[in-house]
Amino acid sequence: MRLHRNLTFAVIDSIRDIFNEGVYADKAVEKALKRDKRWGARDRKFVAETIYDIVRWNRLYAEIAEVKIPYDRDNIWRLFSVWCILRGISLPDWNQIGDVPERRIKGRFAELSKIRKYRESIPDWMDELCVAELSEEVWTKEIAALNEQAKVILRTNTLNISKEVLQKKLKSENVDTEFVPNHPDALLLPERANVFKTEAFHNGFFEVQDASSQLVAAYLDVKPGMKVVDTCAGAGGKTLHLSALMENKGQIIAMDIYESKLRKLKVRAKRNKAHNIDMRVIDSTKPIKKLYGKADRVLIDAPCSGLGVIRRNPDSKWKLQPEFIDNIKKVQQEILQSYSKMVKPGGKMVYATCSILPSENQNQVNTFLTSEAGKEFTFVSDKKVLAHKSGFDGFYMALLEKK
Image (cartoon, rainbow, N blue to C red):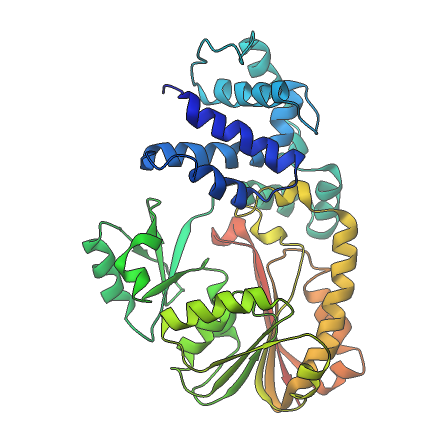
């Protein structure tokens, strides 16, 4: 493989932005891919995947390269050189690349690969916390799975098309897909492709949504005609799934504290032809109180550490801090206490996170059930999805019923 200067410089600048300026990796990649309209699919793939690779394995590469954040430009070139050597890519004779000790790099890699926190490239605190909560054995398998590149999964929008017909339509647009066992609306892409350019996407036939995430809306057991509240709707992946499961009948109230996210949901809902969604910004306690005791179903897709979706957001390994997890656990319990009041007697509620930590998951549900508000609920069931077992994102969901 031959390196090209303009592609490599895009990678170097992006790594600087992510680690020195705090830019999110997906935004840095998005910006990098707009640098040159002449780049083909292979060029774009190189830029995106190299950025994500260096972010994902940053601790390991930095230890081998003997560099520390914040990185100066020479540091980033050293990281890049380590990436090249470990990938078997010949280094060009550029003045930015000095003498690279190839044997030392390979030797250090072999040594550090025996230590999990270096091999899997994670901060000490995260390694210790996850061992404490999951056990050494489970965490070792889980972090290895979370460091794999995320698969691209589509969710068929059954309001407009069946999974079988969608598969044929995508095939006609040169996008191959496979069915996913136990995920009735999911299609997996064996080869990555820009699905957003397809006619099928513009016609609202599918959304990109991980297979684990697709389990959540189904877990809520919705029926057409119900009044359903999605309390932390965000840009609405699960809201749109709920609409499809309800066959566009009844009412979904999509709520979020960020109006900008609900605006994105409005655009997606229009494309999906999902007409039973109302959007409400949570700008005070009023919108919540108005719905007390009125909902057949309530979904709480709670804010969380996001440890189950690291493969999608590898930079969260470096941006996440232990105090954030402590704080978010308080928020999760407050949300459960407040939003659960919207469920009417005989109604159901799902509490879900994209975390793998019991302290954010079953422990939160147990704390809620022993509280004053929780005494009105009975525990029905829960589902723990781990990446190393499912092959998809780590997730948790619990179904509770109001007496």
